Amino acid sequence: MGSFLINNMLAKKDIIPIVIIIIALIVGAWLYPSLPERIPVHWNSQGEADGWGSKDFGVFFLPILALGVYLLMTFIPRIDPLKKNYEKFKKPYFYFKLLLSLFFVFLYFFTLCSVSGFEINIAYFMLPAFSFLFILMGAMLPKLKRNYFIGIRTPWTIHSDIVWEKTHKFSSKIFIAAGTISLVGMIFPSFAFSIFITAVIAAAIVCVAYSYFLFRRNNG
Image (cartoon, rainbow, N blue to C red; front, side, top):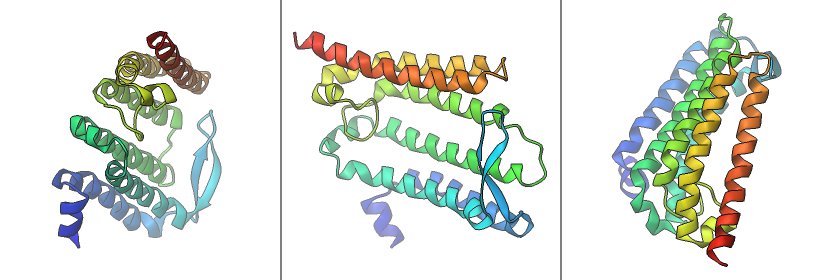
């Protein structure tokens, strides 16, 4: 079964993120007996837990979700109508999967630490993580080729290689700027979360609008 997965779905390098996720799950299972029956699963903008789940949910859901997302992202290119393009950016695509897996693991360990006696303010951990995620995603955007699964996928970028490439080069700068603004916003703890949300929404709107106007300009 293992050799079938590696030969038909997974590459050898895919084993690394999968092992990382499994190790995280093992750590959670090891801590399981000492954890409280209720585990925080959501925090408000002030870094205070305002949503709770059962111990089983808190310990097992996130790593299982991370593993499921990774396997899905590995399988999706096989059914993408533009699957031939993935060969042109398979290395950045792997890095994106790895980055997302590490982000899930980071979030998981943050949750475990928050219920293991550590006084942790989410603003000083999760906001930098989201900000760096945006910056690193921005750095990878220009390397993506047209596909239906990952990137700035609008009707206009999907329609044209030229619009796709120009949109992603432009969006790279916008994503990096949004992540940087979010990091700088942490200087103002009371407004850090609002600054992050504003930067992310503004980046999304600008990138989508740019793809539309670029398509209109290229098509007269």
